[in-house]
Length: 483
Figure: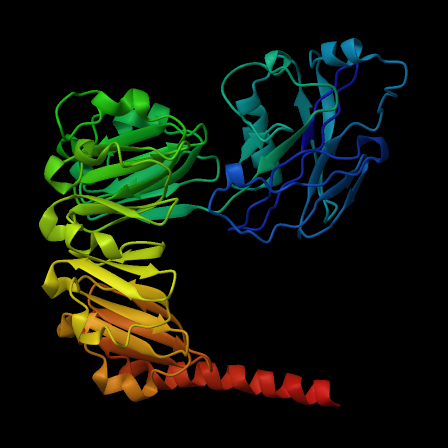
């Protein structure tokens, strides 16, 4: 946390960071200024995809107290002035304006000294703190959780008296598209590589890619949601990238609508964004769901969107479903519309959808060869808890831990060879053509296309060793408890 105070001859700063690579320091309000204790308050509005097990951070001026984090850093000047006698107007008028030495200390005891002044920018302060502390890129937040960046001087940053800023160090998040990667760095900037036409070159929008929250990709383009809930796109313009063009396949016609964006989903060639009011904005290839005008009046109070390669399905607040896009990819759900009530979850293969209803039953639609027809296993699909999908098949975990599969046999739709092993299944993961189930005892069962991971025989011993060691630990703990 960084606190900046100026009383003509004094600057006071406190910076607390999570130093461990791959971790996130929660940002929030500073509480209990009177006794010097601060608590980091987790704010969902600024969730970066990092760890959710953030603890409270307590900071005393001149003393750093660990509470839930491995390492903390503080910057302060021991000549701390008393704020007694200052009225609110005087406190609000205090700003940073002069050069002052600031101590930077790690909990290990390593200390460095920084100079700061009112003309220094927030960006410069952040970068110097990072270099001095030997940490990766981070972001500064004020006490309300707003991101502080840019080239403005500290004296014009409108910092309040004893306002606490947080330097947040978060893990690097990588998003893979069809032929390119995008990485969100700790400071919210983005680095891209791979095929330039498919999203690997973001140089045209680099200056706009700041404070990025998450990224969604389709086969040819990328769309980033920023912390202010606006959207930046790049990649091949024919698939939803150029946000200023009027033609279908570009998003300029909807750019003014892309405000307060909460979530983005993508087909192969189009994007769909859920806004804060539950409405939906789409752009990109019309044939792949880029045009939702036919169902615009129905797309209200949308809670979740799922996508196949060429169509979208939205779950509304009342549990009903609205679909659009290519009918062959599940964009037409009219045949099962009467059944799509009280829908809790939707999963998608490349060309079909599967919905779990409130009573645990399952409704499917789309291309029959890709799992759009589950009639052969309808009587078995009861009390479904979770559904996973390969490109052409589905697998459902039932309440009793058993598994039901359907769709293309070669892509995992036929699990008869391992049915006897699929007991007490806790979780299922999928590749394009195979499934892997984790059982309650920690063992793993695979099926589907061998080239896609459906045959795990060559690592069977390693997998068995893993869950045997786990069971041994559990047994030892149980014996200790009994004693």
